[in-house]
Image (cartoon, rainbow, N blue to C red; front, side):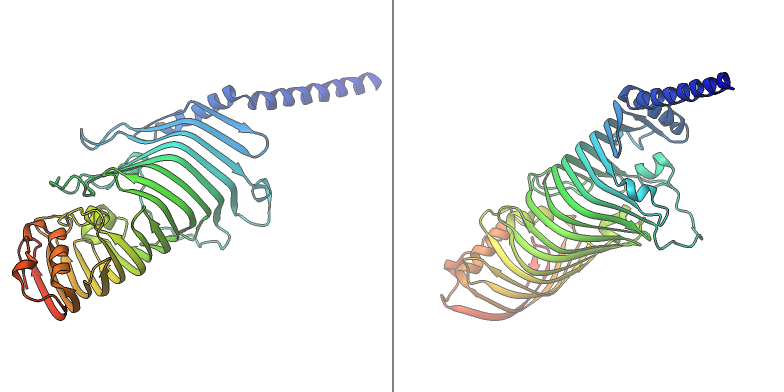
Length: 402
């Protein structure tokens, strides 16, 4: 009996040592990377993507570190399309162990996600998939008849991102000639993205988050130094409220929404409906010219504005939009619409200014700044006092009928 007891003791001891050895081996980045690579290799057979990574490390007891993750498109839609969907220099994820082990709910709670040196390239293309992400991972939208559980939630308490970049190519629209300072929505690029966000939640098909700080530089040189907001996205709508935007000159507060199906976003300019309610805003013409190409990028000219703008980019309507040119007598209330954006040649204005107040010298200076080809000369116009009028305009900036 004593011999049997000794054998059992040695057996249990050996099993404990084996378990400890396996656990220790699993803690080495080399073993963890090899296991993850094997899993990825199996997954790749189902996707049109090459997935590679430099290393994976699970740090006891709640942290995952991934370095050098790259996802490459094996079948780009055309020669000009970027083939790298994602490259992440470093991803750190710190989990909430209590939420993962709790039998009381199905919530997944992540304490913190850190991203560093990450590039994401989104390509809008033709065909049944519509974009590179859906095509590469064969993301087909299926009707889900499973009842939604109340606790079906993912929450990330803190997100920190450093040195991110994003690009978007749209091969569903033709290439257009644009001024050097204008944003090209068919080939847009943003880099130097630094982000601090919190309470990112996915629940019942909705994404929500609080953005405490976002800064970036757009390819044309437009640099946003501070952007704050809260956002809720999903079910065909993106609502961005409490926006505070500052780029060194432009300083604005507004609420903003975009409405459209996932298919509509592949034709953003024509089908996605925008709605912006500006509570208080100072906008530089230099910034506005990046979104409205016919405007001359005139440094130093700013508008104080508030009002309502809505509609798709190609057919924007302004309602009770009040503008005052800084350090100028020119002020107006605008109702009307702009169609044809972002095509400079197709853009058309139909608007009523009721009222508009100005001194002739200030009005001429503003018109010449916005549309240099107008060449208005205040010296040829009579009067030096302050005028109040009701006016309307129709046509392009190159040829507008009063």
